[in-house]
Length: 306
Ligand code: CP
Ligand code: NVA
Image (cartoon, rainbow, N blue to C red; front, top):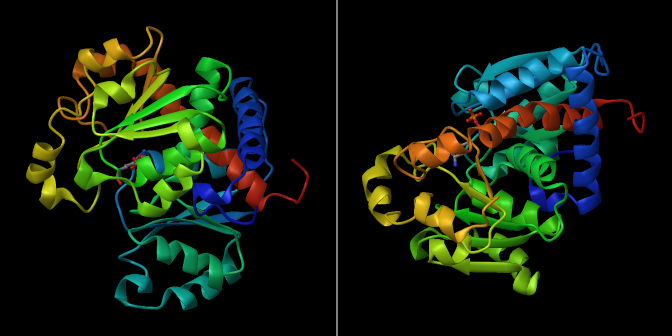
């Protein structure tokens, strides 16, 4: 593993290796055991979209690993004035030990990896959000003790989260059912990937059908970053796709609820369901830190030491 660009690049073994290390780092942090594995290393963090969790967890994570993180706003870099990604990648590779980037086009992330010579981590694009899904799988494993055979249900927009969750959850042998309106389905290549899993993957327009027997329910905002202008139209299209008491009744009694955050209460999830499952949701947010530290160590640490 040289980069973290999208979930489809990871095998089940890669994911479990990362999550086992994440669990070890989490345990060490709780016990106050220092782990300065990345002393002297610098991570550049390019953001062309807003962030709370990704920015803070990467920055804190690098610090906890003994390294340093540099916040680079996309609009302040020459990249924002049209300097090609190819050149930016080659220059930053001379200064840094790794780059985390949050941007719009997946192509930009792939190009950084192609032209640069240091590890690239995708911190969210319009297509995918692999760092979030590693934390999500980690959380499901903590609550349910395993991933194999877990019934995972995603309800809402077929967006970057849906794309990444479908691939990631199927890879770790969950059964995945997804409910999206017809006009807001996940990416075509993701659906083609999922089709290979036969009856382990179900796609429907009925949220209650998707939620039936679920062990873990997931939703995300109806208008992602960059889609704010479409909000009213989207709210109409997603009417009926809210995680609420009716959906919870279809799921198993001990079902957990996850949300990548930020959440819009009263839209994709009710206040009541959100607060009843706040423990899971904020454990999930915390796990961003641990899962990403494991990714940083795997990509930027000394080969095979961890
Ligand atoms: N879930 C997530 O990626 O949050 P931020 O947008 O705050 O980074
Ligand atoms: N789908 C959301 C995820 C935010 C973490 C977005 O792209 O805005």
